[in-house]
Length: 191
Ligand SMILES: Cc1cc2nc3c(=O)[nH]c(=O)nc-3n(C[C@H](O)[C@H](O)[C@H](O)COP(=O)(O)OP(=O)(O)OC[C@H]3O[C@@H](n4cnc5c(N)ncnc54)[C@H](O)[C@@H]3O)c2cc1C
Image 1 (cartoon, rainbow, N blue to C red):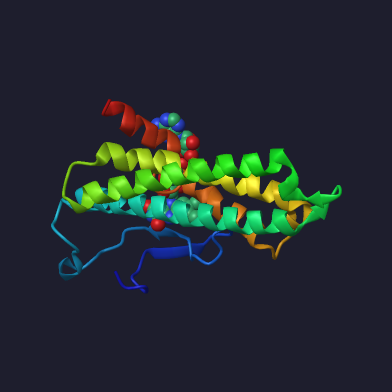
Image 2: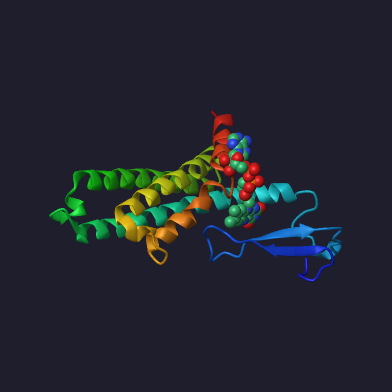
């Protein structure tokens, strides 16, 4: 529908993260839309949205894989160059093992996303796998970015550092596109 359609309101929202995306609340009050503006097939909109969700959820798996890899890369570079207590932070076993553990979980989530994408590409039923990706990848990313911020110390808490922004941007991914709990229900229905 056109932006100046009577009854259509758009209210900007102030967000915690994802500041580059223009999220708004759309209001529709007695709006009339010309028949010629119909997208897709009448009474099939719900199915169209559901198909889009499958694609969106695989893409979120990709976003999480990329964000996790970058957060770990930034953090490994940081802890290898940061000197404290007579050596680099990397020399602390607790630090490097935590990063190794996060890297292993991120790699596992990445492979599951590739697997779901390959099933979707092959036209196979992959609702269960796609729901698993959406349930798992954002939760892993959440743990990765928080773990990585921790090893940046106080600088990681400051606006203007990449890891601080990554923490804020990751937060929405366990909620939008189907909250983790809702996705787990979709997986459970198919077990
Ligand atoms: C930045 C941003 C962008 C967005 N973009 C879009 C968009 O482009 N298009 C669009 O349509 N929507 C969009 N949304 C909306 C988004 O999809 C919803 O916020 C999300 O699906 C959660 O719904 P809700 O906010 O109504 O939370 P609620 O349904 O009130 O749920 C709140 C919380 O309760 C829990 N919960 C909910 N249901 C269950 C359940 N069945 N079992 C157990 N726990 C449950 C979950 O933890 C959930 O996060 C966006 C939201 C944000 C914040």
